[in-house]
Length: 252
Image (cartoon, rainbow, N blue to C red):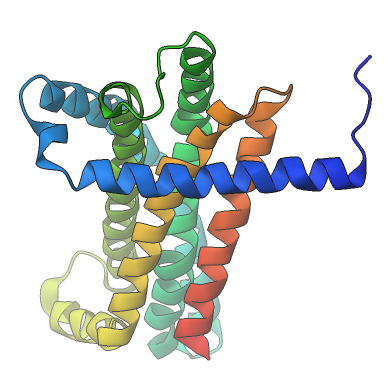
């Protein structure tokens, strides 16, 4: 039976994992900016991981996000019509669904479906010695970087897809299939996405992509039992921090 570590020992072990995560993030960013990571046989490996991370789940995630968005949009639209506040329905749906809920849902979906398994794969490769020596970048280009890029790409792609679907559903619920309200609708959405909101939304989406693409892979440094659960908790904590920073930027 495994003995429980002392609080000081647990704190030191946790700090060591976060420090390893910071080193991993810096190393992957450095490799991602190097042209050698995409030359020759490296690019087919990267492309394969991009497709495997995003494409299999794209269509049915789009269906699920459309169903979830339709339910929420319908609730907001019917409520706004009942109180005579139709002019606020677009802003409510865009700010709540598009700006906040859908990016977070896409990040959590990629985390649970793709990246936890990839972190476990890298832990196995590290225990087998296939990522050693640590100063050799080639095993990291071969095994770690493509997985991180795949998770980040899938997060961005699913976020953009679900946001576009939600925007179309919002228009259809408010105005039907008639095109006469399209200029008014695009103007209302454009007023919400002013330069500051657009910048914060872009940074938040990229922050989610970086968190989902990198943080779960730190499970390779955690040889303890329930390493996947700890990777999930660490990634959720980073996602929550990014979301709180975005909320502060948008509303304070």
